[in-house]
Image 1 (cartoon, rainbow, N blue to C red):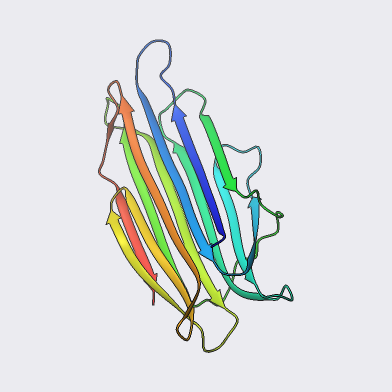
Image 2 (image 1 turned 180 degrees about the vertical axis):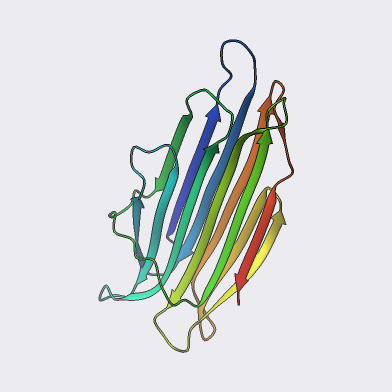
Length: 208
């Protein structure tokens, strides 16, 4: 079966200044693997180019022999860090890998959808005096659509911890499986010196 794979990683660091080793690092990663029958196209857009954060939309479109859409998998991935008492400049590393490469940069974010999964994640870090050092944020959502009114998307959560959420999406028309997508988001925080971190504040929402 044909496949599409994607992996996008974001690392945001407040590095230590010269006079101490206080630092905080956020690492997040979104991956998906899609298998399907027929043909599919992938659109990916960087909605925050040359900024100190991640904001990426992507859309995989399964198409019939005429090129008309049958089903879609859309994902929205945001990661950023708000400054508190941190004094150094952020270091931001964005890494993207898609196989095959995207067909364009015009994804569509569906307003109505067959299923959705959403995760918000936040970690507060604190300096040695107890003040807010930096706030680390992640917002991630996937939405699915089916062109056929009789088609369904079966969504299941296969892994769910504070640092990881993995969902499997199976698109079906009758007994036929048209598209299967496994989507994974991970997030972690690390600190150094006198900086401390609260446990992650995580909210997951699913429909249906």
